[in-house]
View 1 (cartoon, rainbow, N blue to C red):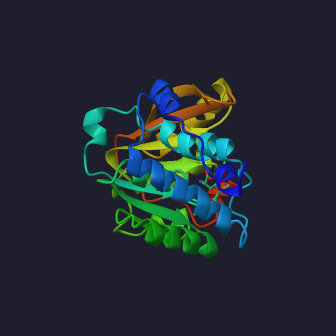
View 2: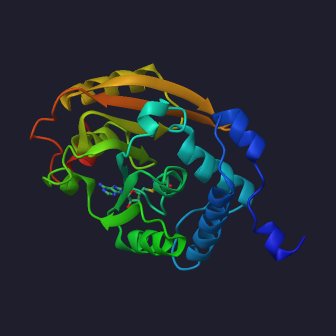
Amino acid sequence: MSQIETNRLPQMTTVWQQSLNWQPDAAQEQLFQRVYQEVIEGNRQQNLTRITIPKDFWEKHLWDSLSGIVGLEQDFLAQKLQVIDIGTGAGFPGIPLAIAFPHWQITLLDSTRKKINFVNDLITKLKLNNATGIVARAEELGRIPGDRQAYDLALVRAVSKASVCAEYSLPLVKVGGLAVLYRGHWNKSDTASLKSAVARLGCKIELIYPWETPISQGVRHCIYIRKHSPTSKKFPREVGVPEKQPL
Ligand code: SAM
């Protein structure tokens, strides 16, 4: 097999359709391929991901990013949503979502400047004019008037404990908006501790959706949290406090 063939993502049209009832069009497929190539290239300069084999990258970065979102209500998805991806790293789940939903405006947030430099270069190379990377801590952004309670949808994947992710994301969500926590294994005691944390943030767990990834049958849970009243000014707490003393 040539080098070019081994570096291509697999054709997964049927799997997209059967697992998510969604599939990318040809232009989106090409952009996914570019994302893959750029992340592999970026990995030479900095540690962006350990998931580099095409099939694994497709499943664990692309499919996983879209899995918890494309099944939401069509009326909601069709709106011009303001979206924030907290702790985006190399751009997941935010970049695949910016490709899938070009009418959304997506902010990709990370506290590491090198990661955001990579993400902003990627946005420029892919000409994604609906995405912007910014360097900040979630605890800081959640206190800035233009960002606090300004987003319809906040996404957090692989950043910290669930209640920490809740404190990072929920102050940024508008009343009526939604936070989605991408989790792996999940049990009843996880639900109990998250429930009390989100109540303190003016929110309620709306749904816990169990998933299996389509190739390796990995366990996933998407936690959907709805904001029903404004978050108290006490939250988010100072930088580092949510992680040290989770709600
Ligand atoms: N979400 C990506 C993914 O699923 O591939 C990246 C996950 S990576 C393990 C966690 C990222 O969260 C890191 O890039 C880190 O810099 C960022 N992060 C951790 N705490 C943060 C905070 N309080 N504010 C902003 N970014 C944070």
